[in-house]
Image (tube, rainbow, N blue to C red):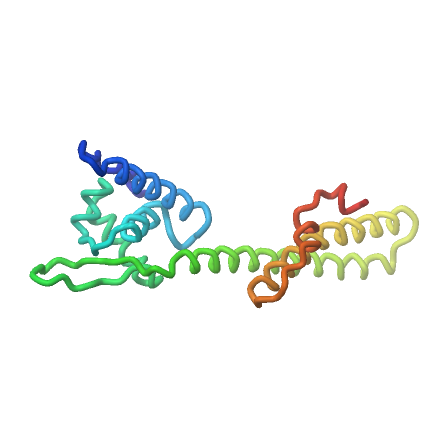
Amino acid sequence: MAAKAQLHPVPDRPDQKLDNAVDTFIQGAGQVSAALLGMINKVGGQIYALLFLNEEPLSLDDLAERLQISKSNISINIRLLEEYKLVRKVWVKGSRKDYYAAERTYPRKVIRDFLDRIQRNLLDAITTIERTRAQTREAKVDCAGDERVRADFILGQLDLIGSFYYAANQFIADFFNGKAVNLDLLRMALATPEEFIR
């Protein structure tokens, strides 16, 4: 379990407000990374945030001191960030330490990975809905009376929830493919069941 990251207290100096702003970004980026992306945990998000807003590359020691996180934890997360091509090792003249800099394309990658993750879940949901629909229709053939009413109810509910997942999936697919975004699809994806019924 990662140690709780506490930022190193910023000394009283003229650019203290700027450092405080960076601290806000670091803390927020750690929370966002952990919440949105399975591949990056809170510490990884904080490391990247610090590197992203730093003009010069930082060593493992620099990162550990600034974030008040153990060097071993920093090292593990740096390797993960390297694997995802979010940071790169750089050479600093006159030093034997390993230094790291942020890849600046990260915001686009975050959005893409986040939407990819959503779309995979949408497709899983659609597959489940279609399988259930097929099984229900097959069962309905042999149904009569109350059971046939029940089958129709199930199919109606599947249509209702399916409308949401199909709309959301199409919206994201159009966005990825650079097509004009259909606002009606967005409205359907955000609608409540009562709004669908209307």
